[in-house]
Image (spheres, rainbow, N blue to C red):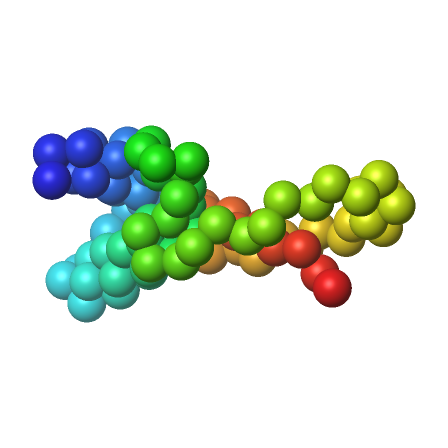
Length: 85
């Protein structure tokens, strides 16, 4: 829990102006979703807590056709990347 609080503080709260309680709750929910579904964690193979790791790409032809999309969250504070099929 201490690690999550420290991560939340450094990656979100130290970089954001919070206007009211509703804004704080929205920002914390978005950060929690990002933290649990997208962000890799220290641990077993950097797996995300709620999603399994994708299969690694080993085919060189697939690597040259790799298209990555970036989704900004919380006004560009958090960045999520995914492979566009």
